[in-house]
Length: 327
Image (cartoon, rainbow, N blue to C red; front, side, top):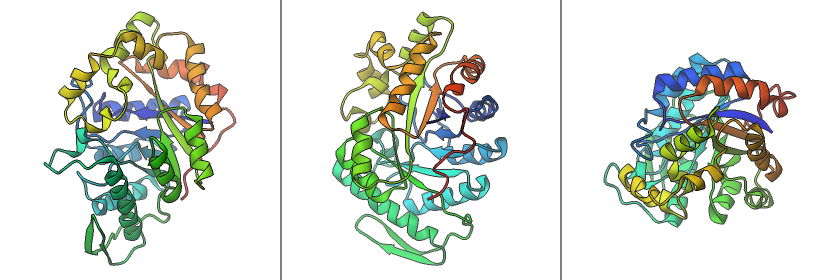
């Protein structure tokens, strides 16, 4: 299993993300995930830059890192024809080091233009058609599409990469995972659930299975727990809340029910590297091919130093290239 770094567009500004990407490359992380949000999950996180601008900067700031959106929603806030053009440009700039991670999105980001927020089944239907639109435009030439959710009229993407990037589909639950197997070049999720990996493979899914997780490394465990709880309690909200709550204020209200202990149970906090290794190995044992780790909080430089010396040699020492760089 390869270990990459997860850039949080919600917790850090664009300049900080570029600096983290350079540190991650120097430390030996193999690839980058970057989140795509219009809003952070709560005001304590405090950021949410435009991801496509940041990716352009990442193309110049790094030389070996594959960059994957984790994940972009191509259905409501941004039309899939525009996502197709943006992703094609990123793939050109990154010279084969770009992958497009797509998902069905959250109301938090997609409601901003006043559009109706569809039910889960309709969101998956929209995602499937959006992928069709994107792949059609990536064929080159003048293209049109008339579907149930989207229309494209006489559109051509003039700047296409030599090889179109792979599309990874985010999935939570049986329907989304089955969709990922049917239409994706890979599957991504943030929980080390062996059953979902098996479902993806059994349904004919090819390509990598990629995961994301958070840690809060610090020499002070109590401080790490408090930081993780202050910034990311929303990660522990149950059910469909993350998909339907519309504003950061709503997430803050719901997250008042999440205790610090509950966050610490899910997020390795503090200096005990055995806890970090145990959490990482759960993804490996579940069948993941790639895992992208986000460090919560400000102690970034010491995190990268520690992981370079103590964690990455357990996983990346025999890996010279990342998988999932081709469709």
